[in-house]
Amino acid sequence: MATIVGGVATSHTPTIAFAKDAGKFEDPVWKPIFDGYKPVQDWFRAKKPDVLIYIYNDHMTSFFDHYSHFALGVGEEFKAADEGGGPRDIPAIKGDPKFAEHVARVMVANEFDLSYFQGKGLDHGAFSPLSVMVDYDDGGWAVKLLPVVCGVLTVPLPSARRFYKFGKSLRQAILSYPEDIKVAIAGTGGLSHQVHGEGCGFNNPEWDHEFMERLEKDPESLLDMTVAELAKLGGWEGAEVVMWLMMRGALSADVECIHKTYFLPSMCPIATMILEERTPDAPVEDPAQTLARANRDYVGVEEMEGTYPFTIERSVKGFRLNHFLHSLTQPDMRKLFREDEEAAYEKGGLTEEEKDLVRRRDWIGMIHYGVIFFMLEKLGAVTGVGNIDIYASMKGMTVPEFQKTRNAAINYGVAGKEK
Image (cartoon, rainbow, N blue to C red; front, top):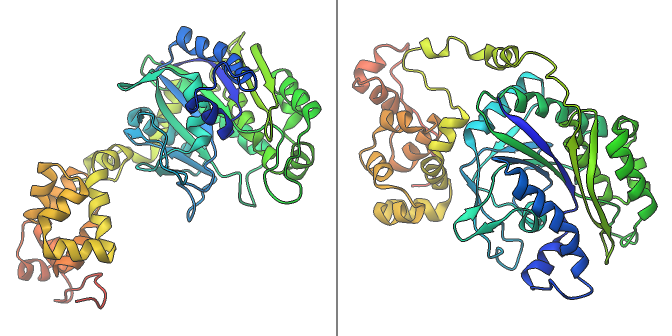
C-alpha cells in the first residue's frame, strides 16, 4: 500500500520564481527566500517521494472561463503556463494518471464532486515554490505530480471545514492505493496578503504565526472560521490558507513541525512548514473496503459487450486525438482540415496511428483507441457524415441495414449552417 511521508505548507507568490530565475541567490534582499527553502529541498531529497499531491489555486491563467472548486490533474505531464510574458524556462513535470484515477474514484465515492483536466499549464501557484523545493534538470523532475486545483478566487467558495474534509478523504485515497509508493502532500498559498483594491498591501504577521501554530497543533480550531473571518485577519487573498488546511487534513492527528520559516519582503509572506506524522492514524476503514466502495458503481461494466466507458485511463490515452477532433469546432481549423487534411494533422501533433484512424474515418477504431463519441460527431459535422452513418459503421452494418433496426429511416448530425 501507499504511504505518506509528510506534508509541506508553502507560500506560492511569484516573488519566489522571480528571485530564482533572476539568480538572486546571494543578494541580501532575496537570500532569505532560498535559505528558507533549503531545508525543504533537503527534505524532498531525503524522503524521495514518488508522487507529490500538490494543492494550489490557479490565478485565472489556465482556468478562466471554467473555474471549478476542486479540479484534479490527470494528465501524463504538466507544463509551465504562459502568464503573459511567455512560460518559464523549466521542463514539464510528469503526472501519474493511474494514481490519479484511483484518487478520483475514492474522492467521488466519498461524495466529493471533481472535475478533471489535462493539457493545461500550471501557473506560479504551482511552479513558483515547486522550483525551489524539488530538484529538476533538462531530463525532468525528481517527483511525479498530482495537482489539485482549488477554486478560492470566486465567491462562493467551499468552507474551511470542507477543505479539511477533502484532505481527510485524500488520506483515505492514498492509504488505499494498492501500489507501494511514497506520497508527499503540499498545501500552498497565503499567508496574509491582499493584492487588489485600496486594501492591497495588507499583512498581519501576528495572525500568520498564530495560524501556523494552530495548523500544527490544533487544526480543528480553525475549521469553523468563516471566509470573512479569515479574510479580515489575513486579507482577502490570504483566505487561500484553506489549502493549507486541506494538506493538514491529509496527515495524521499527531504531527510535528520539523521546519518553519517566515519572511515578509514585500506584498506576501514567504513561509514554509514541514510536518511529519509522529503516530500515524490507521485508515478510517480497511483499504479493501475503500477499494470495493470506490468501484461499486462500475462492477459488471466489463460484461457489457461493445461498451467503452470514458475512464480517466482512456481519456489520457486518447487526449491528443480527442483534442484534435475538438479543435474542429474552431473555424480556422475546420478550414485547414477541409483544404489540407495532412497539414491539419501536423498542426494537431497527431501520431501516425492517429492520423491513419482519422484518414480512414475508422469510427470504431477511434472508439477503441480512446476517443469519446462526441468527438466523432465533430469530425462527422466537418466531413458531411451523419450520425446514423457513424452508428452503422461502428456496428459493421450498412446505413440501410442499421436504419431497419430503428423506428424511422432518418439521418442527422450536429453540423451548423456553415458549408
